[in-house]
Length: 529
Image (cartoon, rainbow, N blue to C red; front, side, top):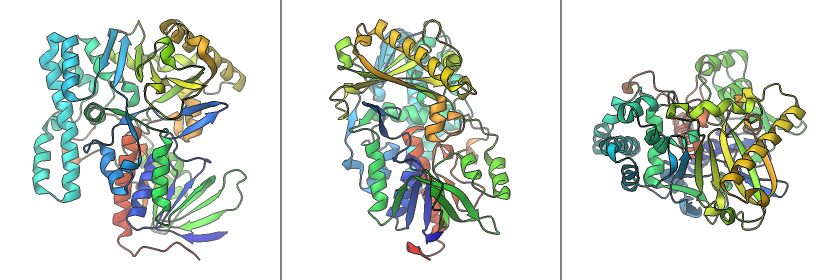
């Protein structure tokens, strides 16, 4: 066994781990990142299945070029903000069906969003203005408080505390409770404002209002963007930020142990080749950034440490999972009338916004009648740089549960997937006549796929569910990368919130906490013992 020493080891190359590693490397610490797969990025990646190139992520993020976007300062600090080409995706989404009925397009920008909503729902103008005003104020307040902490600015701190009043008032509320307060009886308006809820969770009755305001506020404020060349470009740039400072990124390496000392603090990790389990190596480090679920990190530790992790995280509710049906077309989808980047389709029997997650269990059996709520992603609405030639990708995203597929024999699962692909393709063909004639290849990823590919329990794609805070605002933000194990930090959605933004924020906060620990001792040089 060969031993090496680094200041920090990062387990996993999702955006949280890459962000943490890049920031620590940028600060002058020696970093080694280990990835069990043979490609970088986790959900922020692009891969091929046969001839079809597939985007693994949720297809878009808020535009990082906006100075108030949460990714802006991270990427600017690392010097890679302008190395990435951010393609505006236009309107945030088009939604149709359900209570909304006729198509409604939500534009970005708080002014345009208000005007579009007020024109569609003129009797709710005042309520719309209040709701969007609170979303904007919460989004801006938390950005101001973040700046105040980083700059040590008392003026910005005072301004942030004044702006945060709407957050304090609704700190323990769900999205459903706030929407009922403002829009009771107008389910179409609720659906118009929350059509993309699947980007965050599956049930407005359990989704934290503050999280919705932060995440949706970022989309409305900045607009949606797709990274030219796919989300893998962001992952590759972050990995380069590690290696250009002398850090190490290794793929195909499975971490099998996290060692702790007599005081319960991390001191080293051990890893092997994933393919054959051979070639074990040991790395000493004073900080370990776990870009994985707490349960996965705990499984690598001794009994005492595992018990501490279970006590801290074992009772937390997991987020939803997703399915993704991917179709390769012989021509651009615009030839059959599919032109929007993001289209949300609600089923005809959905009459209330709080029924949003009712279809999450649909795939436990064969398709029946109309499809559950789903989102269509059309990548050729922008110059993606990936699908200029066939097969051209169109993805359909929806809620799924691991239980829908648990213990189902492989052949039965494959047959059910094909029947769901048939149903989804038929639905697209009804809405966009001629769609089926363009399909040359197709595949369906389900919650089981998510669990396997992302190595997350139950296929939870967003880490822990963003439930309303139980403690008042004075107790601070309820989610943190801190763990009960000294030197171990959660650099993933499990340490904060969801999506590109949440994972990167978690990674940045994990790096900040690790820096505080590492600053207590001189930086170690990467060396063989």
